[in-house]
Structure formats: structure tokens, C-alpha cells
Amino acid sequence: MDLGLLTLAQSPGRHLPTLFFWLSVVVFLSIVVIVLAVALRKRFGADPSSSESPFTLADLKRMLAQGQLTQEEYDRMKAGIVARLQASGSSQDRGQDAEETAPPGRD
Image 1: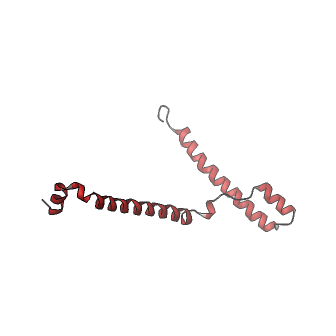
Image 2 (image 1 turned 90 degrees about the vertical axis):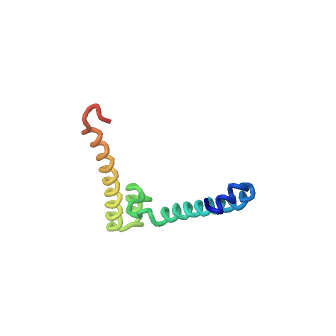
Image 3 (image 1 turned 135 degrees about the horizontal axis):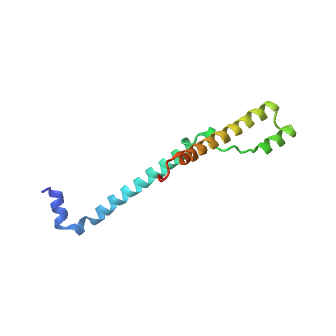
């Protein structure tokens, strides 16, 4: 039997402060790692092209009419919004198609 385990078994109360200290260190470091992982994922994990557009098509039309956008900028931003809507619609449609084509009785 290991001498350290034998000593711990003979006087368990004497080592409790040391045990609690190291347990606290492990818990603290685990929390720090989790917080850092979440922060890094939020900062670097988000794809800027997949984020929602801050403008609606109505906003773009209004900005074009007021001269805040050129026709080229309007066309480019409109195409981006439409592409995102089509992409999100097609991914939802694929999920619905899979449900519709499943054989009866299988969920």
C-alpha cells in the first residue's frame, strides 16, 4: 500500500484542509477554462456572413430614395439579404421534405 494513502487512511481529518484547497483550485481553474472557451467561441466562432442583416429591404429602399445609398450599394445589399433568406428557407425546406418523405408509421 502506498505510504501516502496509508497516512491518509490513518488520519483523514488532518488532510482535509489540503484536500479542500486543491479541490478549490481545480474547480476555479475549470471555471476559468470554461469562461475563456465561451468567450473565444463568441469572438472567433461567429461567421460574420451568416449574421442577420441590420437592414430590411424597406430600409434599403428608403435609404436609396434619400440618397444615402448608391444603386450599386443597394443592389449588392439587396442581393445579400435575398441570398440569406433563400439559404435559410432552403435549409428549413430540407427538414420539412425529410419529414414529408418519411414512410408512414416512422417518426
